[in-house]
Length: 367
Figure 1 (cartoon, rainbow, N blue to C red):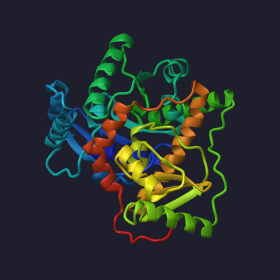
Figure 2: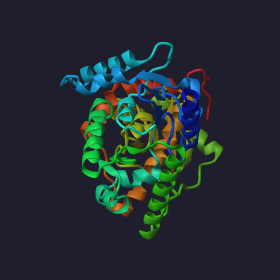
Figure 3: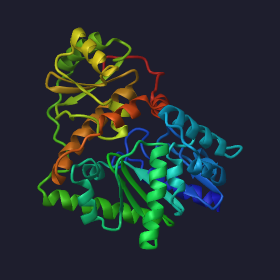
Figure 4: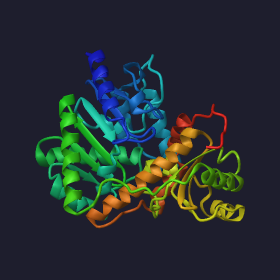
């Protein structure tokens, strides 16, 4: 039974580990029986999972999280959550369990898939998202934004149980504001069916509003022009922060952070304008970090200490621009609050996730 469950959730992870559903190390998946929850390790990619990679958690030990007296201090609270998660790992199991493990445990369904599809986030990151959700997906559960980790786990658990009391059944679909999608079912075919239904419904909704779902990207600069721009960027940011720089044609910059993944891989703020040393220093003073995304010279540049980091920064910037465009269908975009942004930027879990993805073995090059 255990082997069959793990093979099935691995196949689902690969199916929903594509750029249509997640970028970088985003999203997580799980399967369960009455005693054990098998969940994706933190910092890994859905597409790279194997049956042996899933972390096995003792559900009885995990349950202590739901009744703990949570510290008021966010850092202390999340440290306690991390401790409980690690204590719940069954002997012989390796890896750090996803921080969303308690969310998965709150659904009685055997399989749970949590992703961040761009088409979905066009709704979840919109001003009218909740009303649209009620209209398009009347049986789904919509949850307002709360910080990931303990706060999200408790909100999901309470809301799922409240849904059960009201409707006599557990929700199969949960939309998380400024975050993404959770789908839970006992059969893998139902997981796939629900995803298809959700995406097809949203595509029709965007078409009905005259919104194209693809992002228009301008012509990319030529190699010589890009190389000259990269030299200026690297001079201003430093050879470490901009060890790798990738580029594309122009597209509109977002006005702020949209989801936790956008903050993790592209930062909350992008840099627009000529990247002089003075301008970059001012950016660092205002925000506390170097930009990962630079809009300049009719192009967009992703910067990083590794090629993977630079590529993800650019991909997440493009994804953000697409989400902003899609959100026009539902009353315009709704960015994350400054408080939500600050929590993600300082959260140890996300720092760990970034460190797991960064490929620091590459040598810097000009592209």
